[in-house]
Image (cartoon, rainbow, N blue to C red):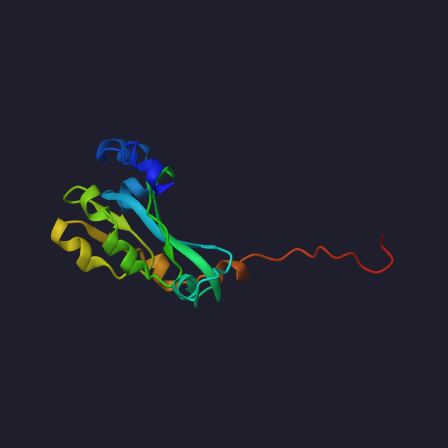
Length: 158
């Protein structure tokens, strides 16, 4: 996917991104050009021990590939990095990506608290915006905020 998308201009101009931003982004995060996050996809366990070692993710406890995905605040996915082994850190993927050269001076990227890459983008005058709502909540707090419906029927109600 990364190779295919290189042929198409998927990174819209700053004015187009701002035009399609949701209202909250226009007021609270006006300079946000891209929202980035790392994702892992499971893969079959490779036969080669070296490939097993490079694709094993301790976070997922299985063999995975890892990539960086970016989207504009309006929802369009506009960046997909090449895939790396699951043992690769988000920082290493950011270092190897061309994200620093894509953004313009004064832009900001939004990421969750796991992305400690501010120093990579500072020389390009691109900031990393980590909203406080990412910092205060645990990843699974949303599960406790909803009442879980019961899908099991009581005995005798079939």
